[in-house]
Image 1 (cartoon, rainbow, N blue to C red):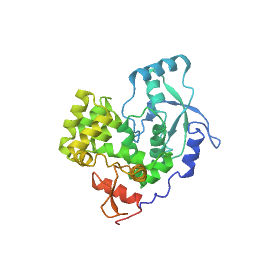
Image 2: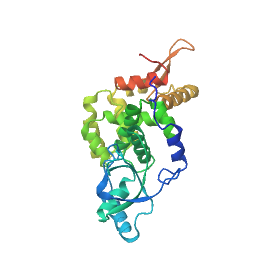
Image 3: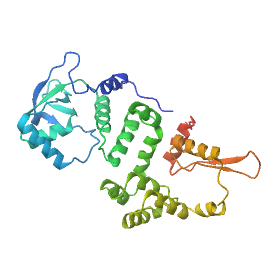
Length: 295
């Protein structure tokens, strides 16, 4: 199992976010006015789209009353008066729109790794981050900090299946990603469509879902039919699965973040558990849950 690189923020960053003090002075830090022209945007910023109307509203407010909460910067080279933005992208952008010359800021010493982690965590705490910006943010944390899905989930206070479901979205075809970004498909619809075994039919099913405004439940039935599993259900109509097996399926699905099937065989007390995976990465994820390493 991958281990976290040394030099990370560890409990320091978690403590900051728990107390919501990431943008308040600590350890004798002071707030200073820094010229906007000297600040470079954060290259690790996961958010790629900003609500223009909301930014304009913030810019209008800044024109009237200024910026109340300072942004966080770092100065990569103490000998050069240039700064990189760590946190406060919306205030930075809105201040430029408001034609401000300076912005209140706290200059903090941070490594590249720490800068990336703070930027990602700050944005992941916002509820309005689009799914296809949230998913790459999780992937960035895993790649840059050598974290597993379980470790990312633990750091962010989310369940591992939650992280896994978002990461699965990265495997969607471009057309479906675009529809998801534009709100023409919901997260639930996209996840259901991903359950289709024949990946060549993903786009066609997505178009059908949008054209006919299909619900997630309707999509689940269609996917079952296309995967050839609905016939099995029809054959077993009247043979309702025992409560304990249905409960076992539900808990396994929650644990693995995948559609798990538990079925009985003719031999009493015997049966099988099926856990499908959609890619090699998905298989690796499932093995991680089982604490199995192929290294």
